[in-house]
Image (cartoon, rainbow, N blue to C red; front, side, top):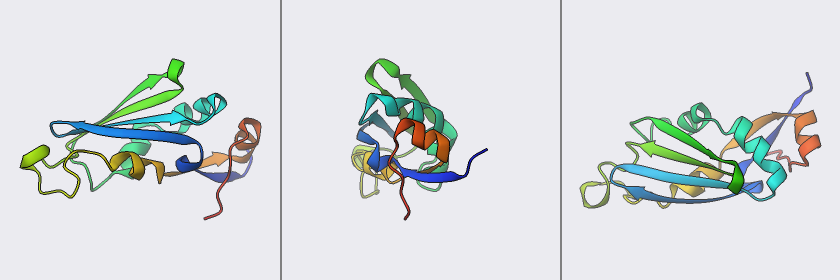
Length: 122
């Protein structure tokens, strides 16, 4: 097994987010189609739930959209009730996309090299 390198989602994807009630909806789209494989393998439901631990109170659900080279996540319990019910700074889920792009993933160096992923040294 090769050594690992760090990859920031910010360097390999675009993202958008919004809301519906107390659920934030976050879409992440590969900047290059060849990087979808990386997203699908490493940006898992569990990894996203861990990234937002302490911020959301509900489950995370992941949907794969390979034809769009994208993943979509529903973050339940993310908005403190949503809209006018919430005391959170972002009651409409707009910053969740930026927050997800701040995620850093450990990737085997050989996979990063094969996919041409930009690595990050922090």
